[in-house]
Image (cartoon, rainbow, N blue to C red):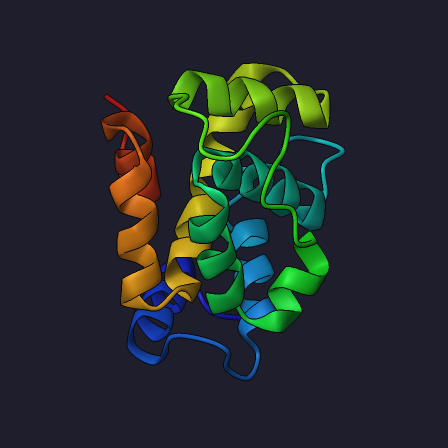
Length: 151
């Protein structure tokens, strides 16, 4: 299994799809140690992805879903919208709240997990799809997407 840094590097170079991408994606999230008790890696990836894609408009969400390896999409589900309309202008606190409500966990348990999922997603996407996502995120979420701390 690859580390999150290795997945990020390989994804950025090769784009997707590629052999073993789903195993690397889900393995990196699991290895991050950020999953709340009782939440499996596929549940976490689906909840964070759906909430994140709700921040994008439908065309942008479709571009990202199409750029992800098919095995990843099959396991997280093709949910571009969760808890609302596409292209909603919400920030990091709302994204974390949505994920916490979806998974029925405490909001403070969500941020590290969401960051691990976003970093794994970013690592699987080719540069253009990454720029599309980054361009639609407010600063705090953009920092999380890039793997940094929220401000």
